[in-house]
Every structure is written in C-alpha cells, then in structure tokens.
Length: 201
Length: 201
DNA sequence: GCCTCATATGCACATTGACGCATATGCGCC
DNA sequence: GGCGCATATGCGTCAATGTGCATATGAGGC
Image (cartoon, rainbow over all chains, first blue to last red):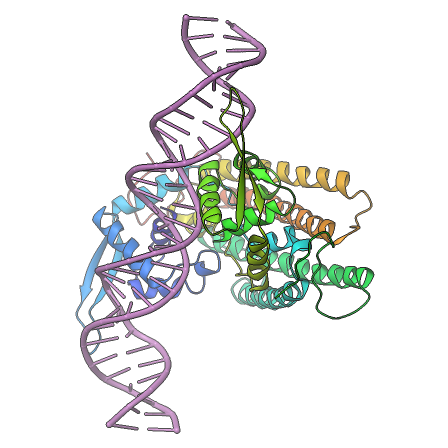
C-alpha cells in the first residue's frame, strides 16, 4: 500500500484534512505520485481503521465539517518500518515507448504531434522544478535532513524532466531526418514496410 | 488497456506464444513494462475475444500444446488507432522518493543501504543498455524506421538508468556529509528531531 | 527415487487505480 | 437569478494490476 505510506509521509510534515492532502497530491508530492481525492479519502479510511492516523472533527458552518488527520505513534512506527524495507525499482511504463517500439506499424504524424506535446509538457515541468529549486535552495545546499530530502527530490525531478524533454527533441529530429530519407515528401504517410496491404483509415 | 497494446506491438515483430511473450516481457520490452505470464495470458484471451489476435494450436508431445498468436488485420488497425491517440505522461511513482520526502521521520541506515542497492541495480541496467546499443547500433544510427524506434528506446533507457544511478550516488554523498555534520559519529542513529520519544526497534 | 528446471497454459482472489456521481453552501461574476 | 468555483466529504463501479495456486511432463543433477 504505497499510497497509504505516501499519505503517512505527507502527514509527518503537519496534520492535514483529506482536502488538503488532495491538493498536496496535485502539486509537490503529486509531481511524483498521482492520486485523486477519491483515492485519498478511501486510503484515509483504511489508515484510520488500522489506527495509523487519528481524525479530529472541526465543525464548520456553511461548509461540511473538516476532518483533520494526525499521525498516531503507531502510524509513525508503521512508516518507519515501511521505509526500512528495500524499495522496489519501478519500470518506466510510458505508453509513448510502446508506440516507438512498434514505430513501423503505426502512423508517424500522430507520433510527431504527440512528441511535440510531450516536449512542451516536460519543459514546463522542468522550468517549474528549477523555479522552486531557485526559490527554496538559492545556494543549492540543504540545511537539515528534512531539507535534504526535498532538495534531492526536486533535483531528481528536474533532471528527469530535462532528460525526457531532450529525448523528445532528439526523437523529433531523428524522425524528420528519417522520413526525409524514406519518402522525400511531407504528406501523412503510413510507415508500413510494404509487406502488408492495409492503409490508415 | 495499455498492456494489451504492448502485446499487440510485440506481435508486429513476429507471431508468438504466451510463453514467448512472457519471456519478451522479461527482457527487451520488459525493461520498460513489467508483466508476468498470468497477466499476459489473461490479456491474450481478451485480445482473442475481441478478434485482434488469432491463435493457432500446435500439438506437442510431452509438453502442453502451444498456442501461437498472430495479429489479425483488425488487431493492426486497433494498434494503429491506439497509437494515434496522445500518450499520457506517466508519473515516476518510485517509493524511494516517498522515503526521501519523509527523510527526517525515518531511519537513514536502511535508506543508505537501499540507495546502494539501487545504485548497483541502475548501473547494471545502464551497462546492459550500453552493451545492446554497441552490439545493435555500432555507429549510433538507425537504418530504417523499425530500427529507429528501437534505437530511441535503448537510448532513453540508457540515459534514464544513468541519471538515476548518478542520483543515487550523489544522494549517498549528501547523506554522508549531512550525518557527519549533524551527529559527528558513524553509529546507527534515528534522525528524529527530538520532539518525539520513540526510537527505532 | 526425489528435486528442480524448462516448457506451456490458466483460474481465483485481492489490491490499486480511474471515472462518474452525489451532497452541501458561501462567494463573486455576468 | 443562474453559473461556476472553492471548500469538504464520500459511494459505487469497472478496468488494470499483482500474487498465489494448479496442471502436466520430459530432462538432468544429487
């Protein structure tokens, strides 16, 4: 239950409501781990049932009552035990890569536009990381252990996005060079190798 | 159903049995997309039901009969239509990052050994990619569209692994420097900030 | 003789994730 | 007055994924 542990990790910073957690998973931690509010509320119920977190209800008028969740000592222990276990190296699981793997059986034009969209997307994220880095760590060093973790996180994110952006750029160049070599025209072509008879619809 | 499309992409190369696909997902494509044989057999049944692939049974003695799957024209069309849709940028989802995010609430020693294991793991994979690249693309260029896709795939994989390996190395250095600054000794310490009373078990 | 490995396929169950929908209300905009 | 937005929580369903177990047998090692 990695999402559960991610929530516990977030709650080490400060107590939060499900709503705040959902916002957190839409920015900072969410750059690495996506989760919508439904998933978070479901996970919070489970964590509460297991005694890892405690909800304190805050009565509000006009809005539904808040439930501010705090880590219990059991929750802290659970997080520490989880963190002591070796991590599992994830696989990349980017479906763009599947498209590239079957590059000769698909249309290149959509791939090209996809690569351009992705280039923009990863560049935006890269700039975002760099901006936060400059703001939070102007001299590039961390003062404490908590800061160190976040600095490392941001650095990894920045590097990752830059690498993927560079990749998209080079892939686009290679694709242009290749289609120029193969076909010599700019029309939308099915890059089949001629052995099969179907055309794109 | 991204796994289904990954299988279709694999079958564009050549017809395969579920067993062979499982082995493929344990090497080439499997570097990017993990799937065990149960997942693959289940997905194959679905693809067959939808008419995207066709199974030809090969009777064997001593072993269970083979089912060699071939892409149907419908399957090719489905793959091409899927590939024409924009890809969804995945999030990193590495639980090592969650550990780093809560670095001040967990024990650093396990994190350190984890980072060392991961460093070795990513270095191995990087070497593996570089080896395949040298063997398949000695001059660093692709001859056709199919080759281009695989070249790009391998290049991305190599870069990714090198980046993560470098990150692990630098994280280890930063962690050493930090623990030296904070504590001045080399014993196993809980990096709590002193506000909480619990120690590691 | 027994154990493990390679070949080859598959079911059942549990967890995780994605997506839509529901509820309740104050605030500002047009 | 109606519309969307922010706040705040949650149910229900289905697809995707992960884990364990089951079957069948020849080949080779201890």
